[in-house]
Amino acid sequence: MIVRHARSLRWNTCASAAVAVAGLALLCGGCAVLDGPVLDPKGPIALTERNLLFKAVAIMMIVIIPVFIMAAVFTRYFRGTNRKARYTPNFDFYWPAEILVWSIPAAIVVWLALHLWANTYKLDPYAPIDPSMKPVQVQAIAQDWKWLFVYPEHDIAVVNELAMPVGTPVSITITSDTVMNSLVIPALGGQIYAMAGMQTRLNLLADETGKFWGRNVQYSGTGFANQQFQTLSQTKEDFDAWVEKAKQSGKVLDAATYEKLAKPSEKVPVTYYSGVEPGLFDRIISKYSHGDSDRMPHHSTAETTE
Image (cartoon, rainbow, N blue to C red):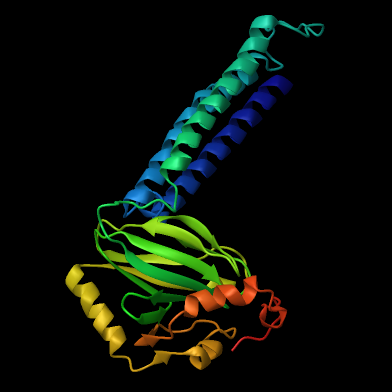
């Protein structure tokens, strides 16, 4: 009677677990996971990164799937009610088992290491995507809590909006005028850190038009959650029109205007500047690298924002 009750309880528990898993699967069905930017890339860099992720997962499945299968088989075979299962409490070593347990994971680690090592160089963010094509130059400056994008070749600047012509490489030089930030546009490529007094680089390319979400993914204070922007991938004609729109804004990003813009503020609307003070990006870097401590960022998560 007790054994029968235990079996009934076990099957009821399994049935409940199966129903719960099925319910979670139905709920997640509306999440459109496969439509997420990481799994639905819009550029060659993000596509290569996604394929690398898939390959790494596939390699790891070689050991993960057998482990789950063996866990289920062993649990079933060595259950308390199975009188046929051998009980060997003094068993402590078996060469074939040791070789199997250690050699396969070691081989997978080596395989993953070689695989990732080669692709790390292949995905060097500093490397030009297509040396035969001239990229659009962009200078990205992280502030509290917004992004400023300067187009030195066009003498314009835009807050919280990045535009690029589709099919044309974009070379982004990145720095921070505050604490460490990290720039990422998941649909186009991985994250690159922005650090005060330093510059990093990121080369991207969009192979279809659209609007792609970007943001800072390095916690930087109270306004961190709102430090987001839109990336516009446009036709050549639409990009030229976008540049002309910025040139007609009538606002100039001189030193005084920049100092006001750099103050902590959240949810800043897209703002266009028709002119940029020459050398602005280099001066932002030099004011930290030259040890000007009076102009270093000193804010905390409790700081009042505009």
